Image 1 (cartoon, rainbow, N blue to C red):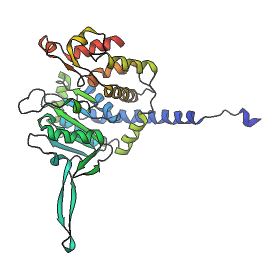
Image 2 (tube, rainbow, N blue to C red):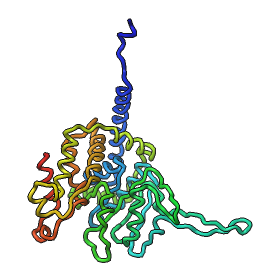
Image 3 (tube, rainbow, N blue to C red):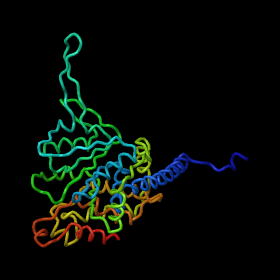
Image 4 (tube, rainbow, N blue to C red):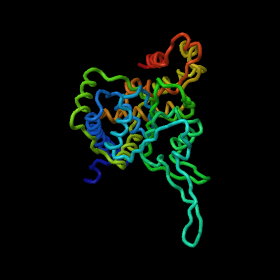
Length: 340
């Protein structure tokens, strides 16, 4: 009789309680991560948040901004704070795929026996900074595309797995267009977010001057490990998404496609819209943003906050729109107003 009176616990309930506990621990750890980054990077709260959302979601980031806004410093700081093996590659027109992926060399061993040995390139790291990615040739961009999508590379017919986790944080300069190769739509779509970096506010720039021109400069400190980041990425995928949030994601993405939208601005001005990968990116990103915010489930506010960085590189304006001065930001704001 006493046994029957005891409350029963189903496996799902146990799993849910475990996930809730892990989410709380991850949220606390992310607070420490943001604090550690904030001691090095000043006045870029939205940039840091969107980048952390992308990493928690397991994706890649395209950073857009003029020179000198701290893009390289942000990547270096993230590598240290998150305990990731970080490498940097300066992309140039003469950069070859082997310069990134690695190559096979013929070696002669004992007894004169010859064999090929694979020498890993800089892509074999956990956090790769691809600096000025649009300066590389399409052939080199395609080599990086495979690494981003498959988390492995193919050299001389053999596959080589990349370390886990693996993230690409690529930078692109919006001003210097000579000698560049526009990124193909397929590669742009592989970036979970495009994060635009603007000039700092006055107070933040004053902090930058004080912190970086004195006799001592702060250095980043490790807060997480690669294993902890991988575990956080696993837990993020268990965050439940309500029907209303999923409906908002689908409405936002599908209304941005000219062939299925009922919004006049989209039909008239958009050449091509976001594909299903945009919906997948939003689904993961809103989960990660909820975790960063210490919440157990995402809301429509998360969808609205991430609409711009997730969609802006997955849509293109037609010639008439560019001639009339229409911007993608205005189009995406119009899409977001339908669900907000």
